[in-house]
Image (cartoon, chains in turn blue, brown):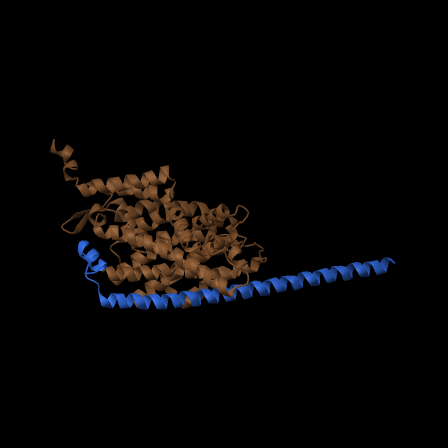
Length: 80
Length: 376
């Protein structure tokens, strides 16, 4: 009699059901696989969105700075 | 004069034990400041529903309800019929969470996923002890360290141990500062605990923060549709926060909505703490399995961080892995304190918060996955 069957007897639970144990193992592998696949996709997509947004923002800021420089240069030319 | 002692004469030792348990929960809430917002209403509710002839519970004659009791009614409407209370609470939780630290270091996502492993191990143990698969899955989800998810999974799977599972889940969440440090110390060396992690956040644009909840909802929904009630409402709350145009709604969700639901949820769950269904050996076993679930989850998070260190140039302090359980923000604070204890200049809080909010998403997804896999 192992520890589990002693506990089961004391607390009036059903004896260990092999089908339930097999089902729990199935839940384990499927669940672990699914959570890592989901997390990996979220990780990749978040990284991609952040990278694209940061690049777009940097490009916009660069363009804005260039326009401002050009604007200043043009005005300077006129006044001279 | 019999009417004066009608109720007293029906008091059983189980009722008295439940009053004591209620008293202990109230004591822990007030004196030890352990999850007072939940343990206090639950403790008072446990006393309330265990007074014989109380009209807060349904009056049943020959199996028929002849008079509805307010706590049973709130349970039937707010939890049993639609799981509205735990799901609505997720809007508030989502509005409270800043995913910035996680988005600036996305590899922390993996720790949130890894720290859910204990749930599956506990389900296996519970079936080996003799619990049916539905009850075992509901017990395992205690390891998610997430009260609303535990309630929802237990409800969806029709577990008869809902009361015990909820009490155990919230009690252990309150005990995170005691459980986690012991387990983390057991799994790490002094040298590992001293690993420094500089915080150089990559700037996270507002567009990313707005898109994130929508993207997570789509991905989680497509892979684990049964998790959408939790993940969707969590992300809806977060979208309210990040959109920047609904400040009042976001504040309402974070404060008024979350407080109101928490207040009612605690006392409503007490409907499941009636002596006849709560004072059983199974409750004691669930208490033990719940502790194991927390321990296994913490260990899995720490061990996974160690594995990541094998492949990573920038070393991760393995203690961060323990914050991958979703007891937010308590677990992150515990890790910060542990880090400072080892080296007063090593601030791990932002990294731990990143792992912690990842755990929040992961536990909601795992809850949905388990519902789907068990009912399949």
